[in-house]
Image (cartoon, rainbow, N blue to C red; front, side):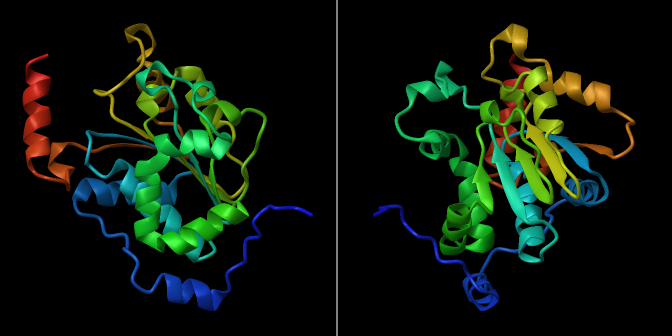
Length: 231
């Protein structure tokens, strides 16, 4: 007899009830508005900007809106797992348990947009999937909203691999902060290299957020500007 926990599929009435108090997507700046337009109009959007500028939150908000309105069937979240020099193999647990600490900021955003109960249910059904970047090779994602978060910590080849996983009727978003990479110095040009090569390519939008878009504590913007000057 299987001990696997059975996930109850939610009904349309469940979704309406569970999302009645959810956070809604509202751009807080012109740059964030342009970011949303790019994701709507392009198959692929690459967005850079400092911490707190809304790179992840805006992408997750649109992904959740599209999922709830049946514009996509699944949300795929990927993030490089290289922080502190430790790969997935050093962490205990299965694939989801290994990747979850790295994706906690994105999961918290998803919980705000659709509620934790619905998010947990969707994860149980595979409608929301946390996919380690290293495990994506060979897969294709149709009718999906794909997000590669913290892409400054991915190599050029990894970002290329992620983008070529995009299937039919899908959107792919790559975001990162070019000033906060944990990679060795000789490997830090992946995201910038991708952006340079994709410039003016039809179906691809490039967006840049800055300190004026930061919606966290205002001191973060001043702090980042000062630290950048001192480098």
